[in-house]
Image 1: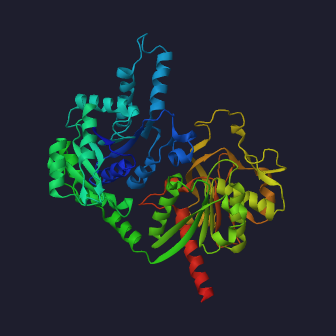
Image 2: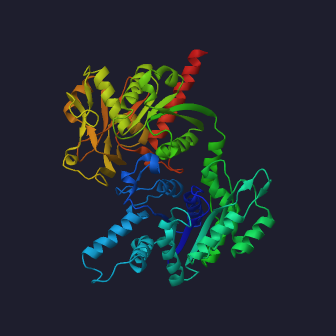
Image 3: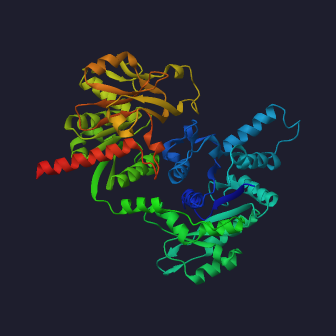
Length: 541
């Protein structure tokens, strides 16, 4: 029988439920259990696809085209296995399903209520992954914090499942905070006590407490939490602040979180997790032999989570190259007022980030012109690739009014245009070109050398594309289209050959980078930045 673990949070948001869930799943995976993680978000949006990045961070896209919560990125990066549409559920999706059933008459005229109809749909979704695939353990992260009004139906569903499945098949891990008051020089357990009390009022008794803390928990503190929260002493787990999120699986292994979970679920604990590869990654991450500075030109830089997967991809690719990657966020709007040389001149590489809309576009184009002319390694992702095409059209092809129709619908030279199948679409949610698509690479190109093959599959999230009417013009002037979708003939990758490293990709490589498999494009980009830095230092010397 599939076992279920529910991870809830209390006291405050952003304690790291996703990281704890992913870390636990990694430890269980290394014990040869088939594990998956899913995220239940209590907001009423159907998915994060229409949310501003400032609201919710990046929108993570899966192979099957689901626009999901960024925590699914953590799940994939830790477990090295893809997630799907079923791994992220929102209140909006739950209510949408129930209302559709009501409209179809499936409830036979009954009054539709939160209990049992909404909670039944939540429970069905909680168990859906296990029904579709043969998992030993399903970990479910409940978004928000205990006490939030919008989380109540989820906690009720957890309560019901614990009663229906029994404590040997369904447990709750509650992540909470034990703050350290520097003035009093002591740790305080009262917030945790209140958080557990709130959870108990929902009918859920936590089986394991994971306590975030800045200072190590003493035996006395653990005993106090155990007594007041009715949790056995060994199930009070310390989660001290870590240097990097990738330390957390090691810390949880030392705290024996996986053993406590397996014992409560009556599963074998004989096999020790093999984290050799993980520890080797951490060794390279913490002991780099080189260092490079990369500029991240975007327009959502105020919130790092807006580019979360890009930052993590630099961590993975940097460790692979035994190189520390210092990422400097640069707001593209600043570059529109003459800050180019001061901001970009001393960088070893520049990445122009994805995004939507007109704001900050000109700054991105100016940044691309600068790095192209100065020979600084460049990587453009999605909108960044499109801006590279516009810049090249204006400054090399001399089509001064070239633009994307997203920015200027009346442009004389629409080198980037709305995809034909997007022109009749009026609704925004889930209607872009989403998910994994095939791409064929040109032999001998930077892309094919990076991947080590000529057939790839990458994830997309866009409405606009390169206009193939201009293909010959660009090719004659030196911009190569080295990645083409074999089914639609859409341009996926552009390169400039007479440049140290100039690559633009229509897809999102950051969404497929993991600890065990750093993305080839990021690996080659960091390597190019390192070569540029070493050659630059040699020239100066």
